[in-house]
Image (cartoon, rainbow, N blue to C red; front, side, top):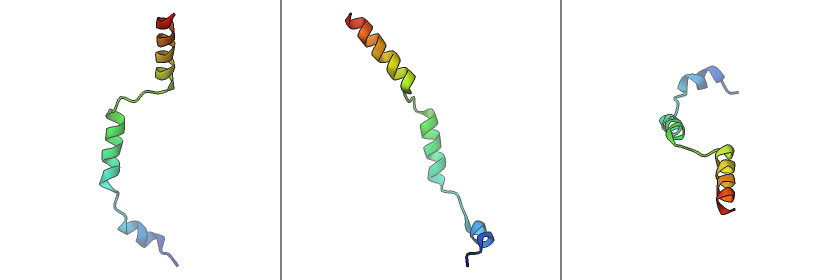
Length: 47
């Protein structure tokens, strides 16, 4: 049987997760609205 209390005492968070979180927050990612606005601007420019 697994002793969850003992397993929780052994737990140490992975440092890479914090680094990944910071990289995602600091990276300028386009969302769907940005993509749609870009497509609309491109199609308006072509007309």
